[in-house]
Each structure stands twice: as structure tokens, then as C-alpha cells.
Length: 434
Ligand SMILES: Cc1ncc(COP(=O)(O)O)c(C=O)c1O
Image (cartoon, rainbow, N blue to C red; front, side, top):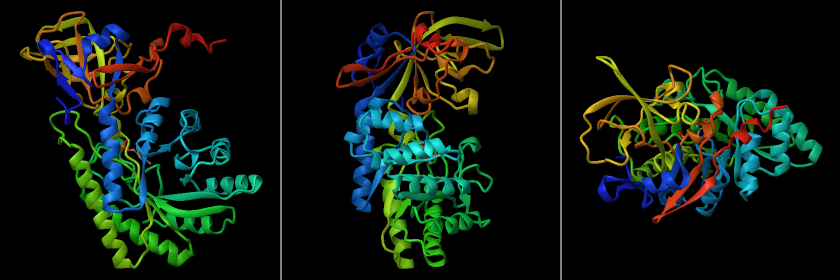
């Protein structure tokens, strides 16, 4: 099914998540439905936090909340001892509303407005990550106004290419994110930062991509970041004490992907920390506070989406369309970058998968597809279908396209479930219309 014990098989070949039958979930909450295995989220958080402690001993995991953002997830990660990476005023608001500690928030974004920065600084966020030159002036002005000093990290692009789909790579030399070390843009930003008296330029940040499995690109990034960390301190006199290496650890979507379990993530952190310690020792640099920002790996495989099969269209010799009652409005990832998923006949796990389907949504777009070339038993209208590993970048990317309602989100754990985000209603759809 997927990489971990997120899912199991209940009675009569019915899929279970968190020990709850998906049929029961569907009748309690309806479909489409996002369901998360809470124990799995907690396990991965614990793995990252404990590994960082064990192999480095000085730092923190910040959950990248763009992957899945709602009040409940901020509560869960806080309880597990994690901070959060936030990328908009809306995410900051949600995190604080849920009780997150402002100092454990790291605020990112290539286009934070003056108002975003003012809100973040007034809220007391721990770090702002600089991703534009003029942002430095804005932060300095805001800090002068409120008589505070804001800790900031400089987002640099170490020029490491992670092996993944190019739309979700962020550290290529032409990326919209970060200042390139290679072309001197990072130097310009660093010099500007040290010249500002209201800004506490305390560290560097990089994020080399997403859905990464191989370690080499991380290890090369570590070398480059340590080199640059030293250069910034020596050449520009910056007093750095923080290194944020971003997120990007991969998860299992389909048979093409490695199956990473908690032990593999622990090993990942171990290798990166060992490399970092070796580089620091070689350069004679004091250990910086180390931050990682995993998102997908914490929530991705924990989540599934349940759908009810609607119309089935068989085009002789060409295709079988299996239409489900969701689509690109609640999972736009296939439409965005042809993301691949494992799909299960959730009530008939044992039946022979002898029919190939294109699982399509209900939106008025030919590209509204959830998964292509999926082998399932001959399906019937009204049956449940489960799409696996939808916990990251699904709910958080949902829209009201075609005036569809964003489905509810449920947590399942130890055979019990509870609602953590209500499904939208038609009234919600017209609430802001004038
Ligand atoms: C700056 C930054 N940190 C962390 C992440 C989280 O990445 P992932 O969900 O792949 O772990 C992203 C994702 O785009 C990012 O841009």
C-alpha cells in the first residue's frame, strides 16, 4: 500500500486508516474526505526531533506548514516539540490562533509585503528569511519603528540540483527563490544585511528541492553552505549562529518511489549531521543552531483521500474514465505537475485489479485528473476509492474551482476519528459575494 503502517486491512478486505474502517468514515463524514493517521504524523515528528537531538544536539525541527495547514496540525507539531515554517500572514495567523509560540515560527517567502513583514515582526516571529533586497530596508524600517531587532536568515541558493521534478526544484541557478552564491547576489544581500542596525543577521538558509531521496545533493549543499557561512563571517563580519537546511525529504507515492520509513529519515538526518559536523570541524567553525523544515515527509503519507465513484465512461479501445466526486479543486497536483498516486478500491482490497482506469474529477477541465493508468477491479458506481499519500499539498492547495466545496479533514487514531476541519457549505461559497 504505502511505505509505513499508516494503512491496514480491516474485515472483508476493507481499508482502514488509524484503525478506522473507511466505510465508517465515509458514512460519518461523507466524501470526498481527507483523512489523516495522527499516530503516523506524531511518529515522523518524533523521529526528526529525536534524530536531530541525537546526531547534532543543538537545533529544532520546523514543520513546513505549507504542506498542510490548519489549526490542528499546528497543535500536533507543537506538542511534538516542533516549530513551524510559515509562508504568509495567513499561515502566521493560523499558527498563532492555534497556540503556536511566535518565536518558533520561521517566516519565508519571495514576495512578503511590507504589511506581511510588519505583522510578522509585531507578532514576534523567531526568524524572517530574507528573499529580496528591498525586503531588508522594509525590515530595518519596521524594526526602527517598533524599537525591536528582528532575527533574520539569508536565503541563499547554493546551486545544488536535487533530482526531482523540475517544477518543485527551488535551488537551480535561475530559481525564483534565494540569492545565488555563484553569481555574487548572496554577497550583495549579506553586505546590505550587516549594514542595517535594526536587523540581527544571524544565519543562512537553503532549501534545495522537494521529494528528494538521494542524500548526495544534501551533502553537497552542506559543504557549500558551510563554506559560505565562513565567508560571510570573515568577509562581511556577520555574527552568524543559525543554519537552516530546509526540507525536501521524499515520500512514497507509487511503485517508482523508494519506501522510506522512520528509520530511513533518521538515517538521513544522521548523515547530514555527520557531514555538517565534519565540515564545521574542518573549517574551525562553532556549531550553529541547526534547523530542518520537513513538510511532505511529516504529513504526506499520513493522509489519504476518500471518494465515491460516480459515472464510469468506457471509450472502446481507448480509455475507461472512473469519475469520482472530487477533482482538481481538492487535489490539483496532477493538473499542476502530473503527480502520480496509488489508488485503491477501498472496499475490495482483495479483488483482482484487472481493469485500467483514468481516475477523473468532476471539474470542467480535460486536465482534471487525479491519476492515470490505474489498475483496479471492475468498479461500480457508489463504491469507495482511496487515493494514498495525499496528506501534503492537497488540502493546502484546494480551491473552490467550479464552486465546489473544500472537503472536511478528519484525524484517525487508535480506532477513533474526529473532525479537525469542517467541510465547506454552499453558504461558505457565497459568504463574501456582494
Ligand atoms: C523553504 C522551504 N522549506 C521547506 C519546504 C518543505 O519541503 P517538503 O515539503 O518537501 O519537505 C519547502 C517546500 O517548498 C520550502 O520552500
